[in-house]
Image (cartoon, one colour):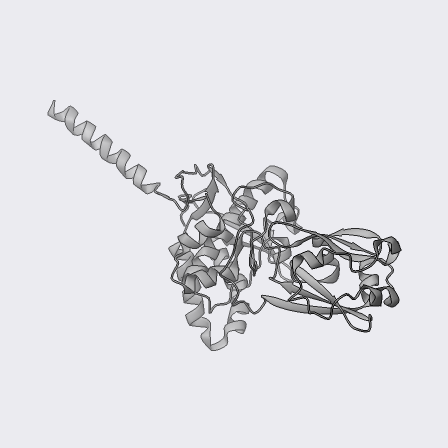
Length: 353
C-alpha cells in the first residue's frame, strides 16, 4: 500500500513538473498553449544580399532584427515587445515555407530586407552603427531577447500575423484595408503613444508634371488654379472639406479629389486625372510615408504638397508607440496586449542545444 501511494505521488510530481515546464503566459482574455512541432534548436536560413546564405540560431537572429528595427535608445520594454513580435513573425514564416516552399534565393526562410519581411543587421554593422556605444547597446538588446526567449503570440491556438510598423499615427490601421485579410487582433484603434516619433509628420511637394508622370495621368495648371477654394493649409481643413471636389468632376481628365477615408482616417480612394486610385497606390507611386494624408495646391497652381501623418502601413504594433508606452511605464506584455488585443503570449518550449 505504501509502495503504491509512493508510486502515485511520484507520477503526480512528474506530471506537475511537465505542466510547469510548458507554462503559458497570457496577455489577452484567454489562455492557451501551442503544441510546437519545432525542433529543440530552431535554425533560421537568412539570405543577406551581398553576402549570401547564413544559418543562425533563432535567438541569435533576433538580436540582429531588434537592432535593425528599433533605435538602441528605445526603452527596454519596447525592445522586448519587438523581440516577441519578430520571433512570432519569423516562426509563422517558417510554417508557411514548409508548406508552400521558399520564394527567396537559395531556399532561404527570410532575407535581411524589411520589404521582404523584417530588417536584420550583422554584428559588424552594429559595431559600425553604434561605435563606442556598441557594448552597452549590444548587451541591452541581448537581454531583451533573452528575457522573452521562446515567447510568441497566438490567437485561438495559432501563431498570429505579428505585423508592425514604424509610426501608426493617431490610429492604427485595419489589416483588411492594406493586406485584404480579416484578423480580429489587427483592427483599427486609437493610438495615442507615438506622437514623439520624428516620422510623425512629413510633407512632400510635386510639380504638376511630376505628379502626372508618377501617376500616369494628365493634369493642367489652369484647372488646378480653378480648384483653389481656400487659402487655409491642409492641417486646418476639416475632413468634410477634403471630401468636396477641388476640381469640377465634369472636367474628367483634370479632376482631383479625395473620395473617401476609412475608419482610421486614412485615404482609401482618390480621383486623379479621371482615374480612381487607392490610398495605398498613391502612397506607393508618390513615395509618401503614409496613406493618412491631406494635400494643398500652391497659389499659382504649379505645385501640390502632400502632408502625411505616420510612417508605414499602420497595421499592428507601432514601434514608436511601443517606445511611448515603455516611457510611460508599461511593460512589454501590456504593450503587446494593446497592439494585438485578444492574443496570448505563450512559450513554444524552444531551447538551445
